Every structure is written in structure tokens, then in C-alpha cells.
Amino acid sequence: MKEEIVMLGTSRNIVDDWIKMGKTELIMYKIKEIVKNDPLLYVTPDTYAFFVKTREMDEHQNLKKETDFINQIEIDIKNSERVSIYLHYPLCETPLCKFCHYIKLSANKKNKLIMELLAQEIDKFIEKVPSINGKEISSLYIGGGTPSLMNENDIKSIFYVLKGLNISMDCEKTIEATPKTLTDENIAILTNYFNRISVGIQTLNSDILKKMHRSSSDKKMILDNLHKLLYVSNKKSIITNIDLIYGFPSQDSESLINDISELLNINGGPSSFTLYRLRLKRVGEDISELMKDYEKDPKSFPDQFETYRMKVLATDFLKKNGYKEGPIGWFSKNASPKVYSDRWSSGVPLIGFGIGAYSYTDNVQYRNIKDPDLYRYYVNLRNELPISTAAFLDDEMQLKKKISFYLKQMQNIELDVQTKTIFADLIDRKGLFNIKDNKLNLTEVGSLMVEEIISGYIWKDVKIFFSH
Image 1 (spheres, rainbow, N blue to C red):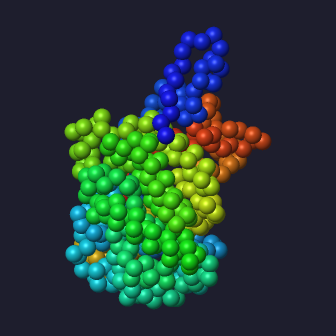
Image 2: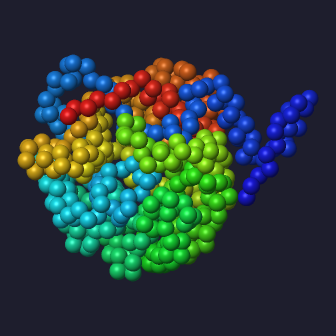
Image 3: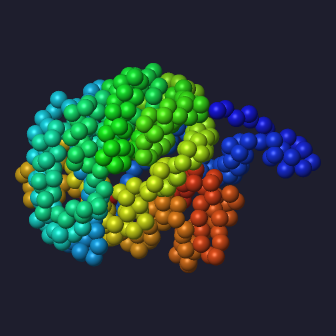
């Protein structure tokens, strides 16, 4: 799968050099030229991080009461045709994976307590935001953690708590799973309650998985259990998604393509793939174990340009095998996942429940408390929602959020006075955008760099605000 790298020489006609280059290396050349002239678009593995950003509130907004905030959520949901729901189940198999930055707790913690807290938070939200009653729920996503550790009674209890909400007949109900939890019994349960199952495989390289402390690290077990899942899901018309991560230490383009190739050969392949670039940490968190690995041996990690090359080759390979990209990083045989297309294209509010869950509506965005004990204190003992980070979105913030979603969804952006102001420093960057009929969209190079564009330019002046 490796492409020969042909360096640009001093030919009198540079087109001759381009002809000698493979498509991948031509794209890499364009990216390097862009990054060379724009430091904001250059990231190293240790600086490629993320967090949910909210504008720092002024003194007036700091003084707003929780009732003002809840009232705005109530208004936004009332004005929306439908709502998307996320539930965070934090319990995980041990040891805890080194690459995961989501809130997770060892599975030896009390499962019953986690389920009770989720139920109490949902009940509290319905009480404070009654407009969600009867509102169509177009997508339900249970992430983690490892939600496939839940037993059937746990799953029943979740749907029981949600019974007062209008979960539509075509609601996309997703649950995340690990290969190790895909036993015959569990596959039967999951495919009975959910119509989309997302399996976190990450890579088929057992050595990498072991170094990442992955409990599902045996390649034969992964492939055998995935074979069983795809056999059942194909019969039941259940959507199956495979998560893969690229950018692991010692990983290269060839190993990524080989992983995809093997997965495609299992019962016709999954319904979709999701490709994630490795992040070593979140902004603001303590130094991670993975970051310590990087500091000891940075050269073992692929750099920014090698990860771009991996994405380009994987994209071409998946497209040749019948998959279409959309949103960026999501590859599907048929329609893109509703959980993202609905929210990003249509602006459907997302309401998250659970430790550290993230939510947004038209005019507000907020994140739940991440500390398990403090979360329990707010849910159990205080008559408040367990919110730690919150902001009212002004017009500029709302527009930036919409633009970010449109970019990730690969949609055209209408160039008016406001959007031209936001893109003022970017429009002249050759190679990132196409502009036609006063509409802007990403080029292939721009789609590879979309996260750098969003963090380096769209949100560059935004700071974090903590309410607790």
C-alpha cells in the first residue's frame, strides 16, 4: 500500500513533477506548503488536543441564576421539532485504556448506583424542562465507558426512565460496545434493543492494543466476536459501526489499510467505519499516561503529516470499497448516522445525561460535573442539575457553532457579511476552500485539516468558563 514519494525537483515545468507524484504525495505537498506559511495550522502530537469551548462570561452573565439558564433550555427545546439524547455510562473494563479521554470508572464500582443516578438526573431534567415531554426523540446514543457491560435489566431500566419521552419509531438507538463484551448472549440482547451498534476496535495490532492497556487485545477474539455480531446484525438489519484510531506509536499507513481490509472481509464488512486521529490528552487535563509515552519517545508517534497520509489512503481505500464519507471521518455504505447528521445539519438540540455529559441547544451549551462524588452530591442532595460548565451563546457564538458543524458535515457555507468576517483570515489560503456562487466548501486538503481550521481560526478567541 505504500506509495513512492517523489520530491519536487527543479524541473522547468513543475507539472512534469506533479505527474510523477502519486495523488497522496501531491496532497501532502499542498498541505506542507499551507502549514509552512501558517503556524496556526501546524500541530504536533502533544498539542493535538481538544475541549468543548464556551465564551468567558462577563460579570452580568456570571450573575444569571440557574432558573434563567433552565428557562432558556425550556424555550429552545419547545421551539425545536425534535431532540437528540446522549447517555454516558462511565463503567469500564480494567485496566483503563490509555488513549481514552472520556469520563470512565473501573467496572468494580457499583453498577446499581450508576443506573440510579442516571434515572434521577433524567427525572430531574424532565421536571425542570417539561417541554421535553412528548418531544420527538430522533436519536438516542449510549456511550462510555463501556455501556455493553450493562445487563438486560439495566437496559430495560433506561428505556423505562425514558418512557415518558416520545422515542420515534425510526429513532436511531445506538450503543457502544467492545469486542470482548460481544458474547452470543450479549449480542442477542443488544440487537433486540438497539438498531445501531458501534464497536470500538481501534486497531487489530495486538502489540499496540496491549501497550494501550486494552482489555480487548486478542486479535482472534476480536475477529471471531465481530463475525458473530455481523452475522446477527445483517439478519436483523442492524447498523454496525467500527471505530478505528490512527496515529498510535509505531503505526503506519500500511497497517491501517491492512486492518480495514481484514474487517471488510468479515461477512461483507460493517455498515460504517469511523476514523479518529489519536489525541494524547484533552486541554486542561493532567498529563496523561499516553503523553508520558510521547515525552519518552516522540519519534515513535506518527507526526501530523504522516497521520494525514494515513487518512488519505484510508479514505481512498474505503471509497473504492463502496463507502461514502460524511460527516468528515465517518464512512457509510448507505446513509450517514442520524445522531450526527440530525444535530450538525439540522441544529437539533443535544441533551446529555451522566457524569461529564455535554449538551447544547440553540442558545446555551453546558457540560455536567466530571467528578463522580460531586456529581452524586448534586443529583442526590441538591435540587439542581449537575452542571459544571455553562454559557449563554451570543449571536457570534451561535454562528461559529453552526459553521463548525457545517464544516464537519461537509456542507456549503453561505458567504454573507458575518461569515466573511469569520473566514477573513482563511478565504485567501489557497487549497483549503472552494468558492462558487458565493458559497464556500472544503477542498480535499481542507477536509483533512478541518479540526485545525476550527480550533485555530473559528474558535481561536474563545475561552472556558466554569460555573462551579
